[in-house]
Length: 188
Image (cartoon, rainbow, N blue to C red):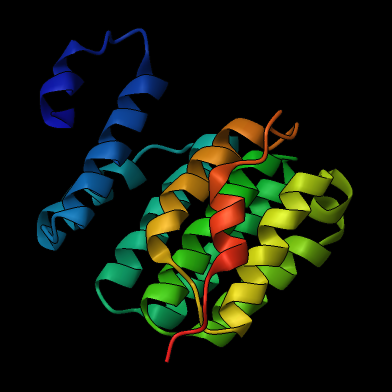
């Protein structure tokens, strides 16, 4: 789909074209078409982005490193992405990027690393200062579930949707996933 959309992007919108290429790389990573993803990503490196576009490109690059098995390099790149998000006050992006890395660690059984991500989201001064009570509750419940070995990865999509919509202000009603996270039982 992204491949077909790219020719429709007007040449007057180079940023949109770059985003479409990065989306295409992400899709190829999800489909495990890694050589094609790497080739397309290499073409993304030829332009010299700055600001948010560079950070998004670096995030996709970290995903690609991880997909190829370069875990330490990917973790370092993800850390750099979150640092860059915070430097530019891109709090929404920082929360979403941290959630992605949290989910990655949970799916790989690296629960201590997932726990560290939650603690970072709760204690990083810029994020802690920016977070509202409902956001802190989300991260606290994720942390508690990791500590109890009871993380439901199927809820992470709902958490992501919540973070994307309510990163600045809490939802009017308690999101259903918060109740579900609070009721999860330990694995075993």
